[in-house]
Image 1 (cartoon, rainbow, N blue to C red):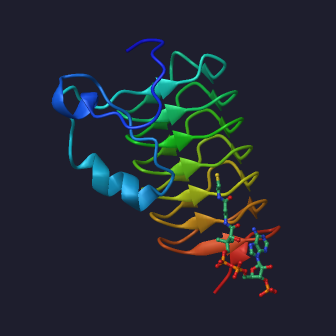
Image 2: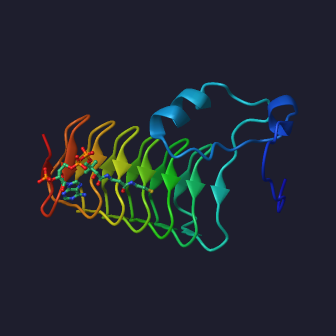
Amino acid sequence: MDGAVVSGDCEAGLNTPLPAHLAIGDNGVRRDLAATKPPGGWMQAVHPSALVDPAARIGAGSLVALGAIVQAGASIGAHVIVNTGAIVEHDCVVEDFAHVAPGSVLGGGVHVGQGVLIGLGARVLPGVRIGAWAVVGAGAVVMKDVADGQTVAGVPARPTR
Ligand SMILES: CC(C)(COP(=O)(O)OP(=O)(O)OC[C@H]1O[C@@H](n2cnc3c(N)ncnc32)[C@H](O)[C@@H]1OP(=O)(O)O)[C@@H](O)C(=O)NCCC(=O)NCCS
C-alpha cells in the first residue's frame, strides 16, 4: 500500500488482509466504525512533512497530518487525528478518537480525553486536562481543566452553557 493513491469507492481493505485507515472527521462515527476491525488491522498515517519525535507514541489508526509536530514523550492513542500544522508538545497524552484540529497547540503535559475536539487554532496551556468528549472552540485559550462533555470557547476559555 505504500505510495498507493486511493480515490473513489474502495472495498479491497474490507475483504483482504490489508491494513486500513479511517479518514472520518466525526469523532463519534470514527469510534463506532473502529469496532469493525479490518482483517489487516488499522494502520497509522503520518504525512512525510510531519515531525514525530522517535520518543513519541502514535496509536493504531491515527493520523498525523501535513506539517504537524508531535514532540518527545507524547502519547497519541488510537484513531486520533493530529491535523494540519497542529503541535502536540512533550509529554502530552491524547486519548483515543480525539481530534486536534489544524493549527492548534497543546502545551507540554496536556491531557486530552477520549473523543475530544480541540478546535481550529486553539491553545491549551501546559498541564491542563480536557475531559472526555469535551469540545474546545476554535481560537480558544484554555487555562483551566475542562470537565467531561463540556464545551468551552473564548480567551480565556469559559463554558458556553
Ligand atoms: C464553540 C463551538 C463548539 C460552539 O458551537 P455551537 O454550540 O453551535 O455555538 P453557536 O455557533 O450557536 O454560537 C453560540 C455562541 O458562542 C459564540 N461562539 C461560537 N464559537 C465560538 C468560538 N470558537 N469562540 C468564541 N465564541 C464562540 C457565538 O458567537 C455565539 O455567541 P452569541 O450567543 O453571543 O451570539 C463552535 O463554534 C466551534 O468553535 N467549534 C470548533 C469547530 C472546529 O474548529 N472544528 C475543526 C474542523 S477541522
